[in-house]
Length: 450
Image 1 (spheres, one colour):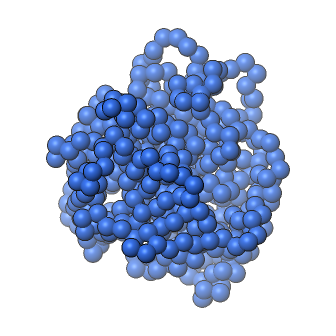
Image 2 (tube, one colour):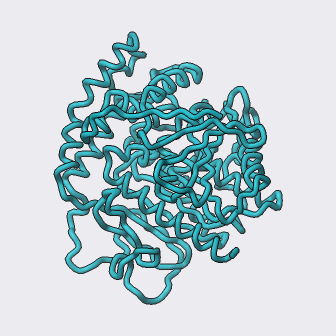
Image 3 (cartoon, helix red, strand yellow):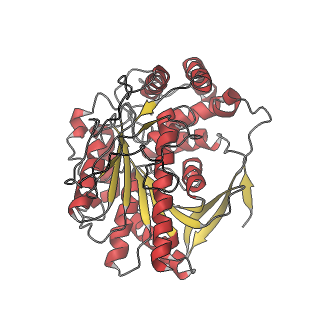
């Protein structure tokens, strides 16, 4: 199949590379595809009059983000996030520079340094810490996060609150707006995306120049099972592939309401079976996904186990949408903090996907599934999202089922915050941590099967 490559312009400066008008458009809309929120903003009462009006609105929002980017480029700052291992070891909070050139590496992983993790000692009961300090080093900075990081998060929050889809827009309109903006955003020059298929299931194969793939990441995009596609998710998926030295295959599963449950679940399982039939070793495969794609990744693990298939080495899910009954407590307690999602804008898409089926079915809402026997899970979320409790409860369910699970919660950031890694230090650092863990699990699985 022919491949296509989207290259950036010759100007490689930080501002030109990251903050084109359409790059901002990607930030504004990538995680806004879940319906409209009743929030103040330039388009709160309806859509912009035309494409030029939309671009003008995005351009007007550039000024504060450029300030944040310039600060990021010149500051030497620290950032903090919560990194809680819930497979029987002490929970810990990792602190370090939130910069993708200087990743945080716990001491038990390759390249880890003594003193970068929790103090040695006894094992503790399984526990999940959301923001509280589980251990402290002498002379730890008490302010928690730098002013630069705070400015980045506040700027991103303000932009997202002005970027929700028009109130009352249907799924077709939301798809159109999402595709129009994301398709205009060029990928990094070194990323190549090729159309592919896995036994009839469409997919996008994503590679990064200079990286000889040693593994395969099977990736599931987000979009509440109703929008998005494998190609629009290529940028974030490529970040996972880059950090795991893997080829990424992003599954273009069928979408509701045209194809409700179990279409997405069937496509995901078929794609994984095709990989195995093609000769890929399960020990060299990892699953990854964001939002609904995170929930689909977990559901596919459960489905593969129930079909007697060998399971992949690990799975990494970002802000997993794991409970379509919308029963999480943070659906209400984080309502004001979340700039994108709410029960009101999620519910119509739940109806589209379930089409009369019980939303509590394990393959629809994997938080209610039997998770026993699954491979190690890496779960990340932010504290400014209504789906925070989905991540926390999913981790708890996995730990209860004796699954090795790492729950990594970053304070003050929104749903799938990793997508904003060009302007948010915490996002790049979270991707680094996940990449280190995922790589360690892949290496460990290869040693076991060797």
